[in-house]
Length: 439
Image 1 (tube, rainbow, N blue to C red):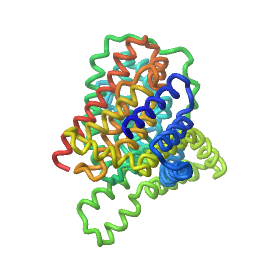
Image 2 (cartoon, rainbow, N blue to C red; image 1 turned 60 degrees about the vertical axis):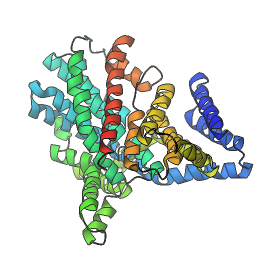
Image 3 (spheres, rainbow, N blue to C red; image 1 turned 30 degrees about the horizontal axis):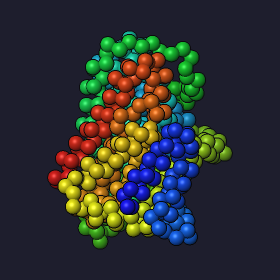
């Protein structure tokens, strides 16, 4: 019976969001309450679980998402992203321009939301295309593939992967290291290699599509400062992950790097460095820097609420005992927990469109089922992130963003954007399954 109730809840979730266009946060709260009552929880217990789920989830993730959004805003407003791009293109030259754009998307995409990174970097694709006369999709796919890979595989990017870490009780430093192992081959295959199959798709640069602030070269930060600021959270967290794998837990080095490599601290230190390096030390008033930070964080309010809604759904499943019921039921099956996590996230992604909602809902469903299973929680995080990227189509805003910015037909958007996203997803699943034999 609990399984049927959960299935009905998921169907109701899909109908309310897709058919009736109800806000995802409101829908998640309604479904969480409905599922809790349907499985027999008392009224007061249901609401306690909802509040506990929202508060417990956002207590940590609000800091990660907030600091990440502020850091991304500084990088965008200061011209650091353009500085990184221009330098890489100059280093790689026209022959390897795809690799320059891929690396740009990878570096800039780590601390910045996907949509922000897309809008910020796509004008550079148009500029390079105009200069080199190369097909736009040949140039664009490596860049957007890198943005997608960082979105799905690499915490502390403020995306589903970072959010699912808390649900699965995974080590975020190990998740980052394993994510990097998956990300490198994935972005190469889904980026420059796949893009070569799209050279025959012709499209023109849309007229007057972008009205983006252009920071003069003389006012931009140096390349070294720009790239150091963008990568500083990853550097701190990766260093912490390496130290944890190689040093004794009682050593000072281990304790120090565990502190500075903790996601909130890593992002806070990086943000403080960015405020100084990209703002104050370049002559900006602190009041102006504060406006940039405030503007950057406004856009994540609804995302935070949706995350909280996913946390409420998860907590109801746990507190009602439904998660334990499902875990016992699934314990007799042979399906890999990694495949289970990927499949549920993929179904929700195809149904809902939103990668964030798909990953959060999938993690809430899967985490109680696989509790105690002999599988790396870090790989479950990555499998969920990979599943949340699969088969982007007409109910995903990213689909329409790519279509309209590159002036494509629906068919060519499926052939390019949707195929690339799905390739990233399946490569992520394959990588998780391979890593499961050694970690």
